[in-house]
Length: 186
Ligand code: 4LI
Ligand code: NI
Image (cartoon, rainbow, N blue to C red):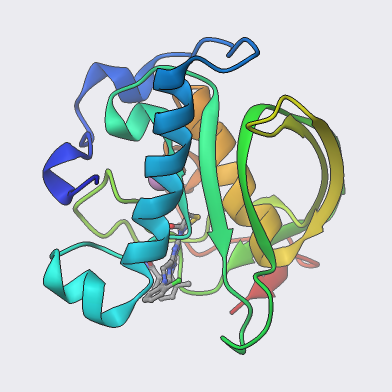
């Protein structure tokens, strides 16, 4: 299982590389990678296990964050009521944003990243709604419409596959500025 020591940190060149496409059927190694990345998110979201293994909780984890430069990311966005089904749960492989809203969305409290130890304050303006095409671990293609939090998380993870970190999007002059009709997501 992945632990914090396995997470690559800002400054590691793998986080700034463009990740390679993944081919199907998945190798045993890639299957294990997918499984272990989702496992990290599940364990990190369990308060007891999170404390036990000294993890930092996350809703997304991209392969470059565990040192693997491949186009794969695990996303697990829990529902506000923990008894409900997650808003989004899948390992997204070779993901492409096929369309996006003109309207922006941003997390009110800013973004955090398992690979970035310091707090970088500011809004990260992203598209509020996206249509995402990706393959799952079985090689099946999905095309899904996402909005608000799950859309933000997927854009953050896809950025990792392109060597981009969230703070690249924060305005240096005015970190808490956003277009008038930006959807603020809490
Ligand atoms: C415990 C159990 C406040 C501060 C609010 C925690 C289960 C920040 C938000 C969680 C912030 C869970 C998160 C992300 C932010 C902040 C990620 C807590 C885990 C909230 C996820 C990738 C950005 C994603 C909303 C600087 C590690 N996650 N909070 N941003 N949660 N979590 N991001 N922002 N301010 N990062 O960090 O997984 S997209 Cl689910
Ligand atoms: Ni990140």
